[in-house]
Length: 124
Image (cartoon, rainbow, N blue to C red; front, side, top):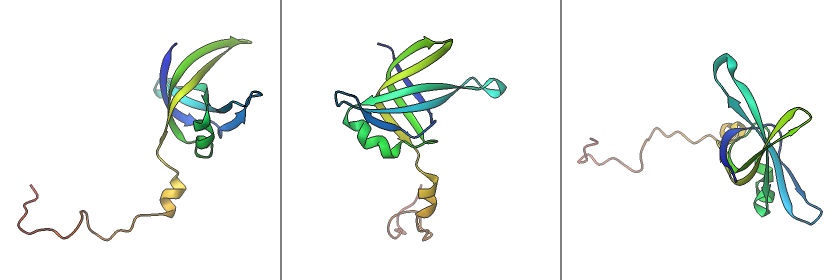
């Protein structure tokens, strides 16, 4: 078994399905930058998450979202192309939706701490 941890962006919305035997599986693809500068190219990983966790995560894994995925890594060749796959053990959502942040801004009351300051306390 080869374990890998990748961090990148979802290339499409996650797709939840069940196998003919009724096993739940969530499929998604993650793009990860490889290299730097003008030589930066994306690597694409086809990922799967088996079990009930996949069903629960489906509405949260949308195209463009940032994720970190850890799991068993494999590679296969088919018709001259290399396919990289990860059978996920753990998925972490990174950040949140920009729309949600803009829609629910936190109130700014000008204070930085909790409660009234005590004049006897020195802040340093």
